[in-house]
Image 1 (cartoon, one colour):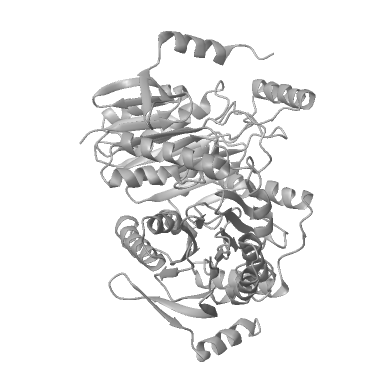
Image 2 (cartoon, one colour):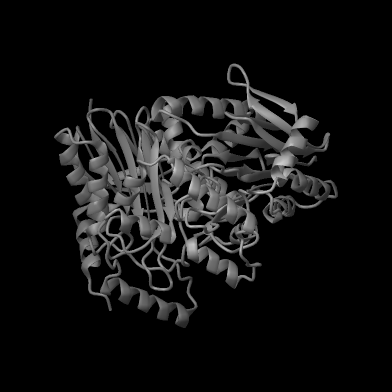
Length: 317
Length: 317
């Protein structure tokens, strides 16, 4: 039996590293995915997940997260939760419930508090400044206020053949209060079946949920497609369909891993991701839509990484 | 071009009748499905939808609803919304937004209020009495508090070939605050594509979302299966899978209609539904799981209907 981990974006890299070490030492898939996502949630420079995440239009950080256990198909999810350090850990706890396993708004926050999860203000001074600047910009220039919706999503496989998928996000920057995207929605933001594989999504949730893309990728892997074939077929066909039917399509990127530790990615924008398997040390790759419904995937360059780091830590005006 | 309407449960019947009349007179699919669901939401004797719906464990009526436009794949949804007369109408309005089209909790209620939807207390004195009785029962007898989760879901097809799906529910009786089920979740509680057909679900949402059953039924119809074949294949295979993988499976019932006005149903419990097509006046049927992954469907008997009516209106102790 082998092991593996894949996560969305450059930001998953440090968490992928931790999950990788855990899985290598026969750690459990659920612990690995939670530790991965917690690492991203904790890092204040990531503006779209957990601490440091950008707030809604009223200045409140509202978070969505989910956890799916691929052995039992058990799901836990939260949406519009506030003031909790690790939304994905709340989702994991809810996945043990047969009833009431998806909770939203104040009820979700209340559950986290009562269950003893670490609570606290998730709005950093930097995130607040970005929000204030954006408010001014939008007023002055009559801009579309929405920008940035990078979910951390991950799939892990342990040496016992168990798989897990998880997501966590502060959602669309400047969203309306209570807006939720695909990240906490089974089949759209995530899906995993240990006998087949798993997938998670990032991008414009409103569009991803129109196609149940994570479920469809897992289904295709179940029919024998490789993760890359399943991702390519699902993402590019759906993006074309939505363009034709809805008139436009937002950003859509998906990652997948099957129960053999093989992985795949498809995207309609520039998209980085982080992956580690028994055959491959944790690495960061860049994916771009290629010709004829394929995906072009390359290791990220040193220049790209240096530029990313510089932008990440550049002072907020 | 033909027309048709199908809705979950006996309770959809009066609404199905109204939608049927509208569709027969070349009315639009979206108006038909909204009127259908509004009719159920308004009726105080239905304990699981809209006015008269049973509350959560704290005595508050929290509602979930969704609306999907099968021409454009546009979706609007609300969850954990309170004090709004017609949750499905709020969902329909949200389906016109590209961003912020799914809203939960206070943010959803706020949106309804600001948008001028009719607001009001949804807890009837009868529903309150049932809740109080249940609280006492649960305390005295250490019962599982959860019971009753009948969503109204419907699919409509108009003479222009446009299709819509919608759902509305007050969710699981005695649920924890903020608990949401499958009804507002794309692919799980509902899905529709006018070029193929639509489906909606009712039952234990926590289990339905483990399988994205509405999406899967529509997908199978897209492969050429009849609605009945698609429902049978999806529901019975999934119920067996969940039993094997999760150890148990809750109540699951699905209805479907394709773009030719043909329909199908599958269920793992006794399940009534209401349907009307160009070939068939609005009627109420009873479905039961049959042998070898099939569904046994018969018109409901006069005795069943009389008994239903009697129970519905019997005084609350």
